[in-house]
Image 1 (cartoon, one colour):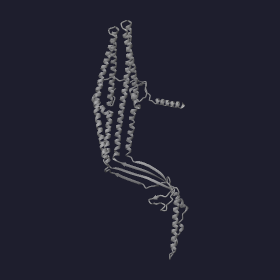
Image 2 (cartoon, helix red, strand yellow; image 1 turned 120 degrees about the vertical axis):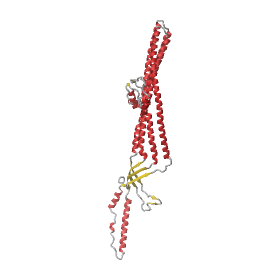
Image 3 (cartoon, rainbow, N blue to C red; image 1 turned 180 degrees about the horizontal axis):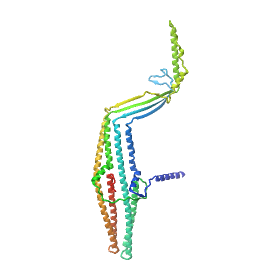
Length: 497
């Protein structure tokens, strides 16, 4: 039981820590603040932005390929005692049987350099790829700006919807009081009061739905900002309904210079151009230079074999000296004998053998210094080089077509987008006019109902027309702002003041 309680406490503490780690959101939130928070927290955008670091390392790696490579290695080994065999004979057959175990170690420091045309082109290609990556990140940022702005506008739209629903409640209460007042004086029936109560109930349901839509829009805004959960915020940025005065040519020039998708495809085309040259470099020769330092040690576990061999050589020299003296003595004119005492195995020789054997692991004997230069000229390697070259050309052609496709699409989308903005602006003006007329008609209907000139049904109809006019005005105004947001995404820059 204690373990379960402890585990639950750990989970709650972890959850609380996760909540505290969330970035604070201002209670009065502007659009710029929402965009700034989204750039720091939106997971989708951050995944795209992380590609910049990898692209930077790709450029560094490309430059690193133009530098020599260096390596260092070392090893140690042990060989047990025994009698080694070489083909059909052994060391014992040669008089070297009973070898001791050996310890060996070695090191190597190498420096290698290779140069090819593909390595020379690698930095340029990596830079072009990095430009494409940065353009893709800007495209992702433009998408993020569009999504956050749309969510911000939707929350404002739903907020106005809540205000409209509350206004409808007030109108329904006013109608109910009018019906009740007229009933008290005998100029209205219970049916009118009942209809007013039904209308009040319907408007109450509409208010609940509007409040739910507002809460949903607020949570969607937090989601686009990369914030988990709901936050009680008040939106302070305002969006004015202004007549679009942009010309199509101005939008073309702006979009062709700033549209992130078009810039990304142009950078991809540039990288593909360099890719063709890199693929063609497979036909060119390459140069390689290498050098290095190395050394080794070899130490026997016992020096008895070396000492025995040295003693045997001394004994052989003494025997040979004695034989020579015996030969000299048999001559008719004997020669003076040789001094055989010069051949003797001393303690100093024994110590020298021991000292020379003491090499493992760091008393290295250096190997000769070497430098090698090579030139490789490819002659025939199947058809892989040509296939890779043709693939690079196809990729370049595809990239060129993608640039052309984006330019054509951008022209069409800008034309449609500008027409949509102008249409939405005119529609919003008309809906505002319709709202004013509906408000006037509702005022006249209330006055006529009070004097008994119209029925309660006529009053409800006038109120319904006014409510629809209010909803249509809100829809038209925010349709205009949505159309401007879509146009800004195409242009790649803000069009609002």
